[in-house]
Length: 306
Ligand SMILES: NC(=O)c1ccc[n+]([C@@H]2O[C@H](COP(=O)([O-])OP(=O)(O)OC[C@H]3O[C@@H](n4cnc5c(N)ncnc54)[C@H](OP(=O)(O)O)[C@@H]3O)[C@@H](O)[C@H]2O)c1
Image (cartoon, rainbow, N blue to C red; front, side, top):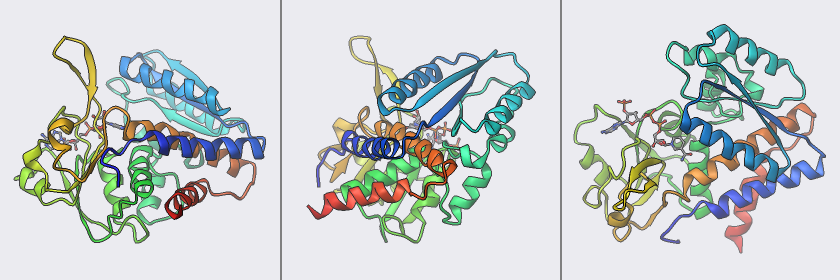
């Protein structure tokens, strides 16, 4: 196995599957991104999503609401998108301004257009191992494991972070009774005691807490596999803004069996997963019986057989 688990080949493969399906079935997948206010990090993410749309042959349209817009206006915008047959995916940009009730907003997105998998219906069905959209970042971790042949079955897998978008859904997925899951899962959070000891026991450590360089070399087991989901902006020695992960990559790389970099690791795969969900939604709305996830996993298996 490679030491440095980069995301690019995985994102490229997933995007290839999406592109092939778009061309084969003459799809015109369209998503709307709904942003309330102008959070700079969210605007940056939106721009990168829109750029990718053009490359893949999809349409991504940004709808912006004033930061002082009432919650009802956002819900009305979601309902219009739910009813528009030309729209296959809806993404609500986070964070929402103060006063918006995220759990209520998430429920309003049609589960079939919920490509970011925030609707509690999709989250519940995912837990039951149904074929539904799963949140994109945990899916990116899952694909990284499949691609690099990291089978967590029976292994001690520790997740740092219990957010609804990363930690909790990933913990659920890793408990699935299917290939590249079946792990023994521990989830840590800000109230966890003896977190260092728990990390040192992990065969696979996934960090998603949002604290730069939180995981040090003395917190990992020899030959552990380290998957870093964190994206944190810090200043480097020269005062430049840079992005780093939750893991101190330089310090951990020798001790780890394999490790994902930041940037260039899981984040890169996440956008490709989002578009694969959009394509799946367009296929469903066109009554075309193809499963994008199966096609992606098939491509991964072909690579392993080579
Ligand atoms: N690569 C990608 O595509 C991608 C996607 C999404 C997010 N991210 C990145 O992943 C990181 C996490 O994102 P998120 O949205 O899941 O964050 P979040 O909602 O802020 O959740 C952070 C989690 O970390 C826990 N935590 C905070 N401080 C801790 C500490 N000192 N010890 C142990 N646990 C601690 C929190 O515990 P409590 O629950 O107790 O507060 C919480 O569960 C961020 O850096 C974000 O930028 C990356």
